[in-house]
Length: 100
Image (cartoon, rainbow, N blue to C red; front, top):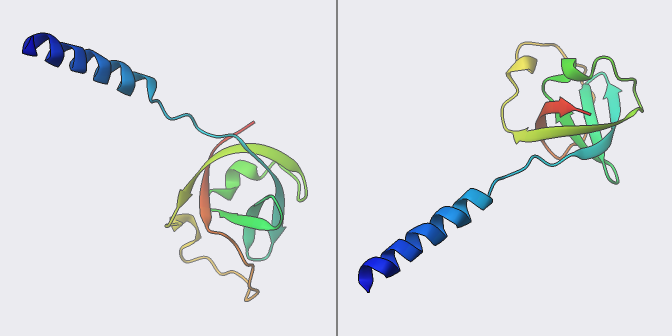
């Protein structure tokens, strides 16, 4: 009886974890550029600084895009670059994984 219970729990756990895949979420926003960098504006003035902004170079300022991104706390692409002294409020930094 115990062996069948353990086997059942093992099968159930395997099925549960195999179905629990994480899918990247597609976010739609608008490109916002100024002298401080490139941002993705999602919703009502929720700007996210794009670390790898080169992936959005072909997009125009104000253009709507759909992207998949990860939040990040490091942005080595901006290290050592001189930016303007303007402040641009943002909700954090992101790294764009794909543009749709």
